[in-house]
Length: 354
Image (tube, rainbow, N blue to C red):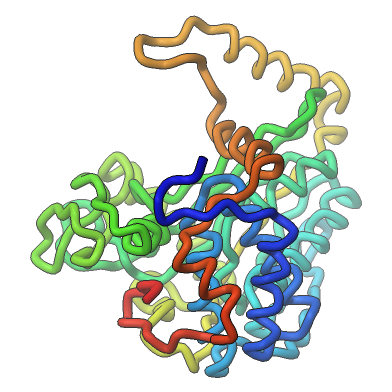
């Protein structure tokens, strides 16, 4: 049974509702379909920060010209195993999914692929991309930059973004190993999700405008990096690889997600793909990874835990359940999706749903 204020929605219905909303805002059918599919996946995984909570924002940016509705997406092969996808500031999920197609083809051709996607919009949940690469038999790493909303370790002003990293590997089991993390304690979308549900957040997630820890999602001025200086170092690494390496703005110069929805984002994403067959017997590799999974599952759980899970496994479990029972959506957002309203035009510079 869903929580109060939460509605269970069939995955197919949810995808169609989002697709229609994006098309009503002006997005052509193909990118609208891909974006809606991506957001449905995120919500089904229980990562609501990257699901329907984004729809009104995307619709508003699309309607206001902040997305190129007819991008000329091209691939420039720059070496035997490298290339750049020129995204022309199209819809992020659509551009980056097409970029992954180029990366997968190059990875299978060369054994290794290092492919950057330059000038794209917000691309959503990175596990979506690496999972697909693993389903194609490749080991995958993905990373992307985001706008400055993180207080660096030892600092009091925002500089880097949440700058996530994702990893996936094929196995001889039913599912690949998939891991996706922001380099902050939580992603900004988690703040949005808490706002939409009227819930408090832990005081370890973020700080207010004075740099003090806060539990009020409406007072958040900056996020905190994971593990202090370690998370700070990882987000710097991501910014260099997915930004400066592609000739894009870096750090505090990265465009804001919410301040001016009429402007294109010019963001970067980067894929590193490896074909196991170029390093070992691919069947043996998949079996070894599968054995690792089985051995981890067999470890005696600590007090308070039912079992040992792999990083990211909880999302896969939630996905399967949601596809069978329905996806949890905030009732307020579900009502918006079913309404004739295209976008809310109520963003406060921080991306609140209403």
